[in-house]
Amino acid sequence: MKLHNNIYIALLLVLVASACKVSKDIPTPTNAAPEQFRNSVATADTSSIANLPYKEFFKEDAIRDLIDTAVKNNYDMQIALKNIEAANLLYRQSKLGNVPTLNLNVTSQLNRPSDNSLNGLQLGQFANSSHVEDYTVSAGLGWEADIWRKIANQRRAAGAAYLQSAEARKAIQTRLVSNVAQSFYRLIMLDTQLDIAKKNLALNDSTLRIIKMQFDAGQVTSLAIQQAEAQQLVAAGLVPQLEQRINLEENALSILTGAFPKAIARAGLLKDMKIQDQVGTGIPSVMVSLRPDVKSAELELLRANANVGVTKASLYPTLSITASGGLNSFKADNWFKIPGSLFGIVGGGIAQPIFQRRQLRTQYDIAMVNREKSVLQFRQSVLTAVGEVSDQLIKIEKLQQQYTIAENRVRVVQNSLQNANLLFTSGLANYLEVITAQGNALQSQLDLATVKTDQLNASVELYRALGGGWK
Image (tube, rainbow, N blue to C red; front, side, top):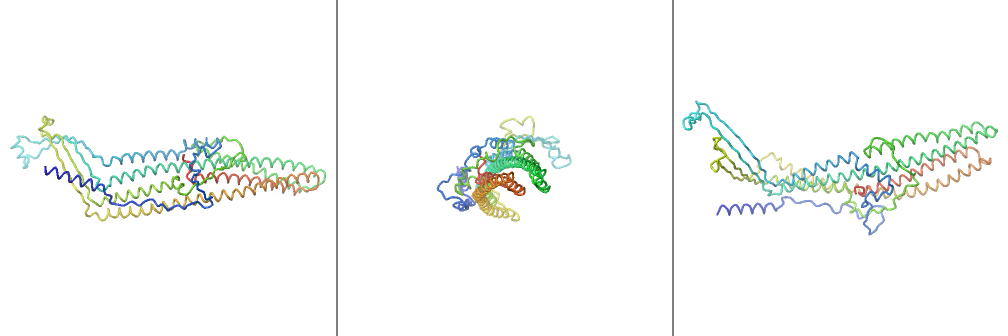
């Protein structure tokens, strides 16, 4: 009875001790993000475009179809999914950390000592045999009491690693969605610029024919023809250059979608692409909860807290309970006779590390340093994310101003070109004025297409910077 009481007291002490944490966690910093983004409009609305699934954020069917294909077939995405599978297996294994181990052992042994040895003489004298047989089948059970929550912290660390792998997949998807959309917009920009170059080339051809007619009539010199031909070659040279860039962009976009280089189906020009009118950024704290790389940094702090607990627990005693039992006999025909062959052993032990050349203490100190580093990395990830959002807000604001200026410039040079053509055909303007007007019209239209594309890409990049694209 007294023995039973001692066992109950020992188990009670184990349970009480296991409820105590040997280390205190560092919480996630709550002041890592500012109250609002720079260049954002102060508002009580905390909604963010990052909450929108990409199928709602993008209005063009062609972009949505490309993104769907990329998310399914892109090899970086598939590798990320495999990483999640591996992390999940490790996490499931960690859940079994406090489950007793059970080993089955079957042995058969024959020992023949020397006839001239003491064992041999005694064996021959008392057992009338020259050898000893030993047959054993046993099961061994071992269990380590999680007194200092070492196993629980190992499980926490594995769980955080699994969640980090999921966040890594989200981060890859947000970048993939952004890259596919921006590549598509660049492709549409190149189509638009190619259309502009071909129309300008046709206009140059018309102007060159008129100048040649004037040369035949003796109204202009050969210099006029040379100048017109030079301007025509500028527009002509843009066509193969733009066609090359279109093919290269198609190849890059194909690879993003997990396909071999091929033509990309699309329709429309830049004028058909709509700038996103939803640019709600919410507040930085919302971004922190949505953006995968920031969430991963937060999980890294969780892992670091768990690792501190594991290394700290390694400095304290370990309580292990073992039990084994089975059948043992020195004759094969008696091996499985019960209860005569039954045996059993129960034991318990406490192991306390004494001198290990400071290895365990060093591991604990390193874990503490790594935890402090993870706090800094979390703050850095938030700082970087807030900076990226602020950059895109500035771009969107200034690109709108640039687009207005570029649009007005196109309108002015188009009117100038029309007037120059009218004056030229009526003999009131010379060929240089027409060539200059055509060059200005070409460049202004190309610049307008570039600014429009930059606007589209800035809205996409803002969506990614806020943590959108993984839904």
